[in-house]
Image 1 (cartoon, rainbow, N blue to C red):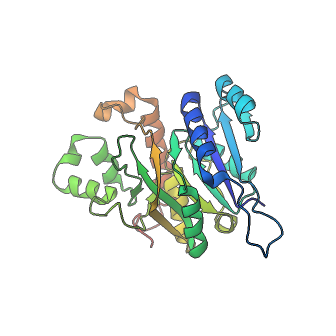
Image 2: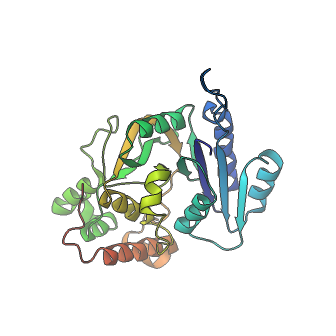
Image 3: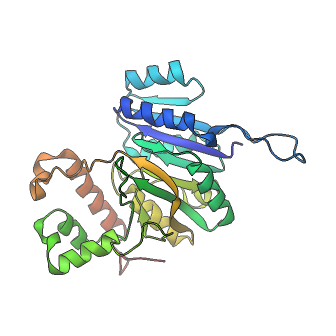
Length: 284
């Protein structure tokens, strides 16, 4: 069994995938490291799995020609993010699984730092690195749970004023120091590591969420089953992040942006799923 597996769900962004795979190839985390002299076998080489949702010819050719060691899983249809992640997990065998978006650049030793931290803290189910924009600024990846007011505050001018602004600040955890370890309600799924042991108890992502909120729901299930969700800033990665569910049109995004409609549909599913709980807030 490899020490860790990497699952990348790709959808029609071959140039970004190329940069992601290049960063993985350069990192020493993927080199086979010998064990100490008391051991016979070295650590096994980690595995990389690319789930190609809606086959990209460029991505397919890239992997076949430059990365033949990668396990390539092509699908004609758009699987959605949750189903894509689950297909990758089902085809993986590592003790730890790093789930990456194809627009993430991994820095040297970031993966090994995450593994070391999880091994020291077996009560962690999901661990996320510090994520930076390419200009070096911090990117928000840890949050409190959504509330209905959060959705309205984020998608209208109301988020700039009074009570709605306070609700939005609470959601964004604006008072939390991104240079310190945090235990948020959930982590953005662009770069997260899960343990196989916890996964066997919690299960994979809920595929009823085609896109968006699958990471919110997953983190909630980990918390409900006594596993922690932790933001770990000692590990650093870069992310080319675009809020594709927001075009800057406010509430008109619902009409003109398909991904906005996906986001709202997933939000409705999330609130409905937990409708019988008195509070959607933190269960920590």
